[in-house]
Length: 258
Image (cartoon, rainbow, N blue to C red; front, side):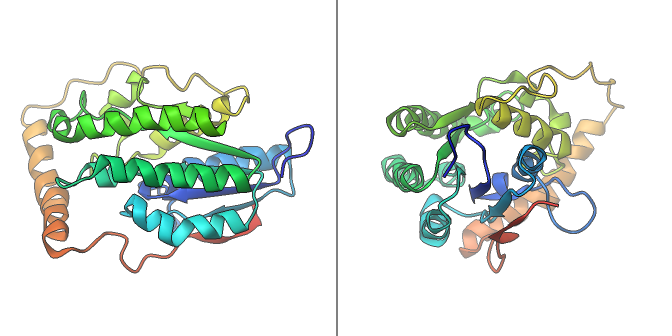
């Protein structure tokens, strides 16, 4: 647990691809992401800090509960984070009430076993991807539930939903679903701010105006996205497979942050 001054000596992150760090690839074959960046900042304040990241891409909230929750709770961290449910919301048959019940289970278990809990209001995709409106109503219900649950269990909420900077495609990878390095860098600052730290920069600030794309660029980008990302995603849904099948957590145990 945290001491009287609130020092964080152990940090455990739980969730899906958002927390695993896709697609922030520093070039070593292991995704980095906002949680790693937060751990590094906290380690600068507490050199003995240890950090575990149990998140795995593609996981539904039920899988997060089954595979990660007990492990995270057993670590008794000073700080824990939970982000999940958006993969469920993207599925046509999503039972929002069931998803919310599992989110509350995560919040209850982690709030009881950790010194402090961080939760997230998920990013609004609709300005950047109008097609996302088909599942945004479910995501909005989950966001509202996160607010209620965080208040109930005393968790800090990172409000990414209202930050319009995430409407900018330049914060996203070519798959349009996962944040790139700049996107994760801004989420890390948002988390640190929610924890009471002074952010190193204005993470909500909009990027400078983008250059006008060359004619046909959008059409080519859409075609590449369709062939490279959307069709494989549809194939996985039809076959009942997941991008996370066979993927293990990148930091399954509490280890020093170097």
